[in-house]
Length: 525
Figure 1 (cartoon, helix red, strand yellow):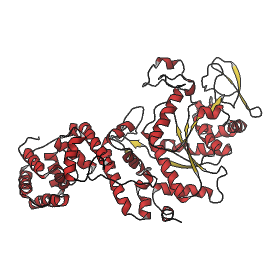
Figure 2 (cartoon, one colour; figure 1 turned 90 degrees about the vertical axis):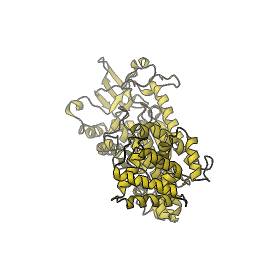
Figure 3 (cartoon, helix red, strand yellow; figure 1 turned 45 degrees about the horizontal axis):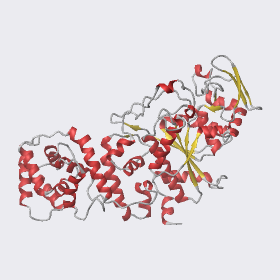
């Protein structure tokens, strides 16, 4: 057994814990289908969003962890529920008027308002595939329309007709009285209008595999449940899909968790083995409200990637998935710096430490080297003090601080410098609030400027931090945290930041002295 596999078998990292739980499923004999199947589901009524990324990223982390502890092959499928009827016209598409006449038709039968694909469903599926491919996910795509209409789902649909009463019993327990009267697990697709119908069944013929119902006009219609003439309601579809595909693992948000017993029961009634599940907590916005793609609160994936790397987003997704987390713009700098801290730690760790390090799971074991010789939070302070409007301004300071660094050799730092300028302009600059120092702070800052001016020794982070530290101590700041808080509030218009000695080293001693004198003269506030 390799050191990594041995470490993975006891690792407290949640992907390895989930992988070990999944491995127990096949302790006695390997899967008959020859591989372990991971699934993620997608509703293609809109564009992929940050939740889509999180679900596929986290599932991939567990998949890769499983591949370390087992020799059983794995597969990940992304299932698009594109046979679902279009319930409303999205507000963010061109030509919305052309869609109104197609309400309740399957998304793959609705014309594409963008004019680039055979249907609206095909357009959104293409967006999903492009989205997943951009991030390098390895997956197999399955269209619900193709799944139903090609006959791949026929066996399970016939079984659903045969065991209709048992599946209905599970569903009816979860419904309100008025809903029970009209509910059916089957949604027929009208042979003339092509609309997905929500109608009660008059008869389900298990022998013939047919259903009989009245359409909206009162006309009685009989259809086979096979061949894409009928789709299942979404909850039965969930369990039926698990049974049809023999899914071994699926994760979903806490809002689905109350449905887990329903999904599991239907899967087992239809002859499948319920998969292992993982329920993650939902993301919250700055005000603690659940993030919704409808209301647009919180951070979109495009917004995150405007200010930070994909890897930093993956790092944020890795952290405590079973804990609700605020996902707003102010979490981005912290995520970037913590990600690079873990990258720097990785080469120094043994197999057990590496198995517990988030970057192993983010990079599937192929962990790159960090070249971030300046933390992102420090780059933000530099952008603030220097009034930087582009990367070139930032690099003038960075190269003096780290002469061996360059955009060519430190690509991650170069990218971060550009992100920092953008983030500073959009989020830091509008909220900066400078203040004048009080008498005690003024005396200490005058002393600091004098000591820095007189200093002719090394100008590394530690030496300069020692000078700043000594001034605060000599002027009676207790706790010293108040001294550093005063420096940031007076000189940078914010209440916190990284080590001030590091900032002086990066910005320059002479420049820092000039900044202090401006702050004392009231030129900043």
